[in-house]
Image (tube, rainbow, N blue to C red; front, side):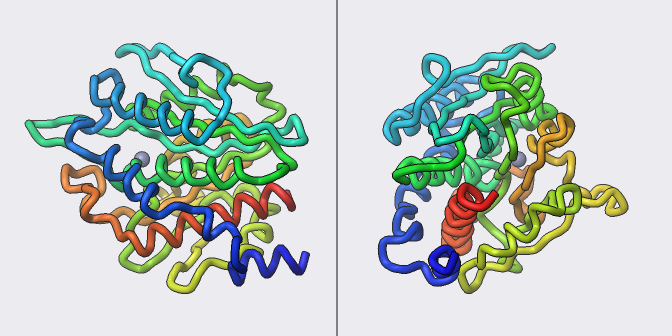
Length: 289
Ligand SMILES: [Zn+2]
């Protein structure tokens, strides 16, 4: 316990902080948010290229999959989407799902919506957690890494996943969803979900963020109206199935859902702190949930 506390507070030599690879993290965001990816809209060539890139990274990291190229297709009225699902086997059959959507808004009126913060930042963070968790000699839980398609069209990938899960739904104990992690003028990361699942709050509070990063609770009660983020991203599909979630994200910013959500706009110092924090929290959750 003392060790764990030290681990979260002080980052001793060789701890998780060193296992997050900043250059790789930023590179992943830069690639996914490049004009080449054409805004990653579901059903487009740019979306397919983004997916191919994530598949390549998952293979490099060494994660296993349930299907060739980790690819799980689903149909919706406008076409076909593809979720990517990879896993790390732990001691238990119980799963924790780390999720991030990789699709975005595509090209509109000749302008590429690159979606660096939304949500190349979440995808790259999830890949870093995959690296960190895969390096552990043993994990109590098994971990799924899910890269959702068609979030922007209405959480369609997430609905497809919970309606046809690759592991029994009853074995999924928690969803950690990442959507927009890389910039905040107030240096604030929101953790949303503990109002619905109060037992999770002490666990989150046990992990102290690095100086310069503030963890804020909220955005998860109906009285907030549109500022209630309970249904704002893929975690909502898990919540609807009774699976506890924690959603991590920043407040909307001037480039939110605009063609100016570019790699150059992310706050690399803040974003790196967020990813290190999330990696520490994931390890704490594996040990203490
Ligand atoms: Zn998003």
